[in-house]
Image (cartoon, rainbow, N blue to C red):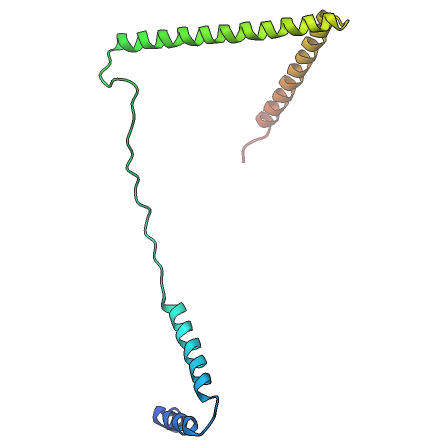
Length: 149
């Protein structure tokens, strides 16, 4: 019973009022700061922000082909696209060859042998490709020899 008498809230409130009534020039600022800290902490602990799942986007699909095309139309479209792709590749190859011819002419004008330069470049490319193939084979043989655990 002694513990309950020490936890009596009425005695605590009476003690607070007797101390608060005593003249003290700092009692109002102390009370304000105390209340602000208390209410601030309560707000921080009770304030809850809940975010739900994101809103699903409204997707509009844009199709470039008619949905009811026949197989013949699809094949004709594919053949036309392949023809355009081949023409584009031929133009690119022609431009590359023209650029090589310009570099060959520049090399000849500078006193270099463009055929020798091309042979060296081809040999370097072949050596790089062989090294890459050897590295690839080594990696593959290591993965085959290592048992899966």
